[in-house]
Length: 270
Image (cartoon, rainbow, N blue to C red; front, side, top):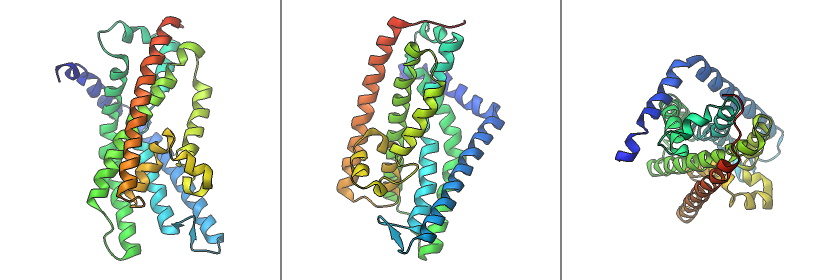
């Protein structure tokens, strides 16, 4: 605890950053909500043009819940470590982090946690309440399952850890490539597709089945399926264990990539 206590100022800095740059926070949130509603109308058109009531085991009501919970999961577990590291390498400020007696990854982690506290408090309850009201109106009864909600929260914590260390590992590539702006955009689009945030993996047949074992499914698909109650007890245990596995793997990879990157450090500017 004494070692972790020295990182609490970074958490406060993350909270202050979210509070200070309110316009940036609100516009980013607005953009993500607009993307969510665009996908809502796209899938509404798909189901309206379909002859059956379900597609690959998803009814229209299930798809609505999937879209909004997927948006919630993606927003809460989002990490911009790759962008932040690339920016600091470009302007040379990364040197200031390296000369301080702190862990490079923990510094970013606790700063992002400050942002997550604000995001969670402002986003989680309204969206979850809206989804549950929708499910109550459609089904005529309360669908909220408290154990599943708690498991969903556990899964989201693990998903954030995977996303954080994945982006951190990717961000360390800036030590080699010098600029990640373009590739970061491509990476985001690919991860959204492979994680099921764009299209549920169940819609992809055998390819989607394979993707469920890769780390990207743990970022979005796994938490959402747990929330919707579409996994039984054995599958929940398996996929939570898989999330822990990928979290450990990416944490180790980030350490390895940083160790290699330190030998090739070239600072622009500063």
